Every structure is written in C-alpha cells, then in structure tokens.
Image (cartoon, rainbow, N blue to C red; front, side, top):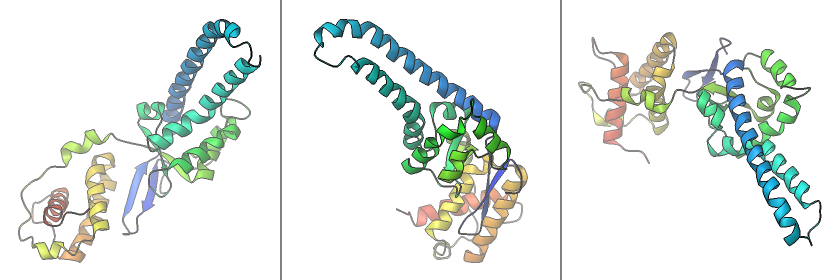
Length: 255
C-alpha cells in the first residue's frame, strides 16, 4: 500500500497494479440498499404468513402449532445470513447494493472471490455488527489503510471500486500496425504476459494518470526485453501496447 486509497498488487510478472479501495461511504451506501432489499423480502414473507396461515391452520391442523413461527425464524435466518454470501458467491464479490455503488469484493491478491471467501467474510458479520450499527466493523475499517472489517481480515478480502467494463470497452480498439512486427518475435510473449497486457488495456481508464503511465512503461519495457520491440517515435505507449496485444492474439490465439 502506498496510500490510503489504493491497493497495490505486485503480479508474478513483477508489474504493480493499483486498485482504488472502497471507503466507508460507498460501502455504507451498498449496505443501505442491501438492507432495504432484505427488509422488502421480510415484509413480503410476513404478508404471506398473515394471509395464508389462518387459511391453512384448519387444513394442516395435524402439524405442530410451532411450525409457522419456526418457518418464519428460518426465513429470517436464511435471508439475514444467506443474502450477502449468496450474491457475493454468485456475482463474484457483488451484491445488488455493491453493484449499484460500483464496488466489488476481491481477494487481497487481486483475484475474484469464490464461495468460501463469500461465506467466511459474512459469517464474521455477527461480530462486525456489535454492539450495533456495525460498531466493531467501523472501528476496524478506520484503523487500517485497506478499510477492512473483521470479515475481510478472516477471509483475506478487500473491497475496491470497479469501473463497469462497458465504460472502458471503447478504448480497446485497433490503430495503425506496429512497424516491423515479426510474428516469431511476438511468440516469445507468454500467455500469462498477454493476460497481464490485456488486463492493463481494459483497466487503463480505471487508473490514475500517473499510475496508468507508470504501469504502461513497465509493461512496455517487459515487452521490449522479451521481443526487442518498442514504441515508434510519436506513437503513444498505449497504442503500442494495444497493437502488440492485437498482433499476438491474431497470430497465436490462446485457449
């Protein structure tokens, strides 16, 4: 970490990627929306019970009288504990509230979370909410640079801002070809390095100006060391990287 707002991730290729961390404000907005959705679910379930239980009591009189309350408790439990874990596992770190707020839970390595992390971080919600209105969670977030609550520490996750992919898709275009590109030379670039290159191209509008330029230079230097290719005079470094990635994909599609 080099600031309170950025998560720095050093990839195996020794390229530093930085992601903007979600603060208390955006996470509170997401939580408010998710809580509202949960309340609506509770309200709908309550109305269903109100109108169906009296009708069913005479038909299902052989069932225990505590069936209704037990079922209600189960629904409350399932919605409260399962809502966040279910959506975060299904939507790779997002709930409806997080999607609206433009934030996502990821592993602290930068990779998407899976069901294990989603369940683990949300089980700790029981501690984070103490003694009320997420008191423990708020204290934990204020006391560390990554704004992690206890659930994030246990699951090894962080919450970052995410720019929708459709907002950056327009920048992944094709400009003039790189002069002197030799396909056998480009074959020296590994699939992992191509993934890194394309990840930068898709995320470049997501990065601050200085971080974006510094990352592009590091990747371009790595490409040059591998292939001997470099940007031509008056060619923007992003255009160079974009053309190299396009040429590699055209010459050697990866599966």
